[in-house]
Image 1 (cartoon, rainbow, N blue to C red):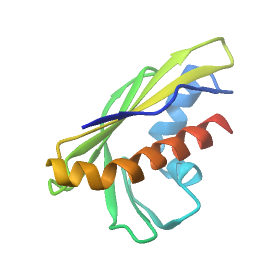
Image 2 (image 1 turned 60 degrees about the vertical axis):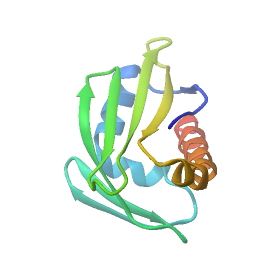
Image 3 (image 1 turned 60 degrees about the horizontal axis):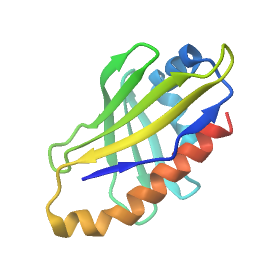
Image 4 (image 1 turned 90 degrees about the horizontal axis):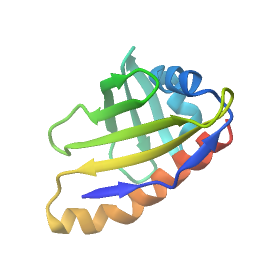
Length: 130
């Protein structure tokens, strides 16, 4: 299953945006209002929970400086990645698109498509406000 966010413009250079996202504690500012838990586990990992949903632990799986940052689930129970593709628009602005990729059975995919789409939209909207 693949879901993409809309591309949003961020008032940060491509390099600044990459470094902002690589510091996992900054994800707390991007989380939806209904976040019931956010905790940094280590320099490259954090756990969060949205009200009514199970906790999700993510870690940086790949970092291609200034272009791509891939977060992946620490647990194998729900295998997925969240990738941020960044592109410079000018020296002071950049564009980012988020891509959620997961390997789910059809029933699970149907159940999580709506909440994940809303989550991606919230992350994008909050990135746009930086």
